[in-house]
Structures are given as structure tokens and as C-alpha cells.
Length: 338
Image (tube, rainbow, N blue to C red):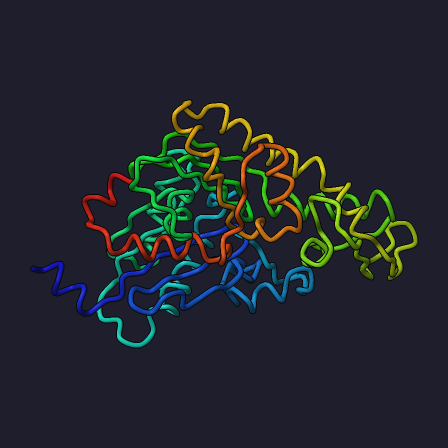
């Protein structure tokens, strides 16, 4: 009765605490917030100056006394205090208008993190103002978010490529049969582009530019019509501003090794899958979610390498957040065992 009374005055919140972006789902409202997981702080006082979208605009552009940092790395907390401040801001912003007591929060976490890393996430959310914190593996949340029938006996498979990790899982009867989590995902692709531009053109670019290149002309499979893009940066030799033109073909070749690591992880998961579940996947294939699912031709490449049908989720960026939201409807005791 007390729980029902509290829930009347508070918002139940689901959080996709991503390395690149954080999405917040409020029960009854849907996704109410999606902002970069970036915090700008004063280096002298450690005071938080900006969070989210405003802070991301400062990346690579801040004066000496201000640093824009990403407190999440490879899907886990790299800076506890800054993550706490970021979560506190997001929870407060998502709960504005009607919050009476601390919210109950469910957070999606990578399936491969340690108990210590999981505890850090829970403690950070609690100190940020959450009344009760429950965690759910990201691939499970993604599978729920894209509408896979996870409670059925036939197996379903999800591949969620986020900013810091790629989560792969085969799910049946409400549980994860086998899974693999690798710390190779969107951020690694951006870093690869930064290194390529420096190596091939002596051009220094920031992570924002690398991400733009990935989104505009990045691909995993040859395109029917190759794309081109103008890139501006600083010449590492002359030290002066410089502009070059690049093609989707050369970016695809630069990303090949990193994308191969993701493909190999998918293949390893399939090799570990019990034979009966493998048979289920022959016709069903698997679903791609996360920001990485938007890379041109990745679904086609994965289908060729695995021999299975590959479907890109309708809203790949929202899959995990929607999954946490749907999970809020479940019984608390069930959630503790997810």
C-alpha cells in the first residue's frame, strides 16, 4: 500500500545510460529526454557548468579553465562524481512538473560489466536522487524495446551497437541463453576515423567531426553510388587550417578492421548458441539496434557473414530506452532477477 501511495506522487523512470547519449523514459509519457552524455566542468573548482547538449557544443572548443568530458567510457562509469552530477541533472529535468518524492529508476547496463561496475552505477543513481535503483542488461532491454517475443520458447537474437559497447544476446523463455559484450562500438569507429585522417592526410580533426563523417558517408558494405564529403581540420605538419575531400570508399576501408571485430563477436555468439536455438534463428535471423545499426550496409554485411536474415529495428536509437520503459510495468521482484 505504501508503495502504491509513493508511486502516485512520483515518476517511475527508465534510463539508457549510454557512453555517447543518455535517454530517459518516464512512465506514462515515453522518452522525454535524449541528450549527449557530456558534462562541462571548471577544472579548478570541479563545478559543473553544463550538461548534455549544451556541454557537447563545448567539446574541443572550451577555454583552458573549462573541460568538456564524457564520464562514461566503454559503457561503464569512468568518473563517478561527474556521472552522479549528470544523472542528477537528467533525473531532475525528466521529472520536472509533478515530482513529490524521489523516483524509482531502472537503468540498462552492459551485460559484460563486473559486479563492482554495476554497484557504481547503482550508487551513482542513488546519490543522484533515485529512491530505488534496478538494473537490466542492455541486450534484454533492447530486445524488449524492439518488440521481440522474449518470453517464447523459440529463440530470438539481438545485436545492440551503442557508443561504448556492442551487446549481442540470444534470448528465450525470458532469459539470456548466451551473450557477448565487447567494448568496440560507435566510439571506436570515431577514433578509427580520427586516426585515419591523421595518417592519410596529416589532418587533425575532433571527435565531433569524426562522428559527422561516420554518419554522413560511413558504410560497411559497398554502396551503389559512393558518397563524398568535405572535411575541415588542422594540418598536423604546417599547423594551419586545411580542407580536403574524402570518399565513402576510403572511410569504409578505414573502418573495416573495427567492423570486423563486431562481425566476429556476432559469429562467436552464434557458435556458442545451443543447436536447438540455432535452428530457431535460421528463419528468424536477428535484429540490429543502437546507433551502429544506422551504418549503411551493416545489415547486409552481417547477413552475408552469418547466412541469417538481419533486420534493422524501426527506432534503433530508442530501443534500450523503450525497453526500460516497458520493464517498468513488470513486478519489482521479477526485475531483481532480470
